[in-house]
Structure formats: structure tokens, C-alpha cells
Image (tube, rainbow, N blue to C red; front, side, top):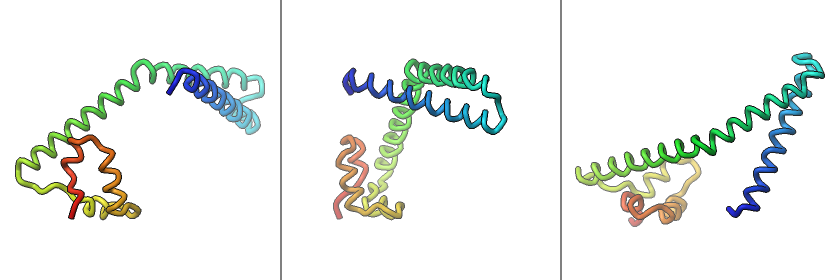
Length: 127
């Protein structure tokens, strides 16, 4: 994503968050949860929380999630290697599709072709 698109998405996201908080503040005021003069404070606190969460995500959260996904991938590949070493046959696209009410073996086969080669090696796509 280029810088101008990223800036546009951030601006739109901040606008949506601000308008959502204003709507929640208005609804809270209309239902007597807060009074009208507290709506601005509610929106300000909400925007501060959204800003803090966004900052945390950019500084730490994304890195934490991506590292955990890499760990999960490594564990999965290690387990697949253990199963291959033990002589367990690779899973077939038909077996994968049978676990989903909407996927067909052709859908699974098409998806498998988009995966990294080390993952593709663990799925038997032909007969």
C-alpha cells in the first residue's frame, strides 16, 4: 500500500471512529446515561483510547501477532514433518473439503496452489 492510500485510509478510519463515538455519546445522552454536556468528554476519552490502541498496534501489537503466527506456522510444519517421518500419508483435498459445508475439492486445490511450497508438500492434490 502506498503512502497516499495509507494516509487516506487512516483519515477515513479516524473519521469513522470519531463519528461512531459521537453517535454513541448522543445515544448515551438521549437515554440519560450521561448528560449533554458530557458528550464531548465521552468522545474525547474515546478518541484517546482509540489513539492509544492504534499506537500500541503500530508499535507492538502487529509484531506480536505476526510473531505468534510465525510460531504457529513453524509448529504446524514441524508436526507435518513428524507425521511424514512416521509414514502418515499427506492429507487430501477431498478430506479437507469434507470438513467444510461450503468448500469443494476444486476450491481447496485452488487454494493450496497459493500456499508456500513447504505447505503444499503436505497436501495431496491429485487422486
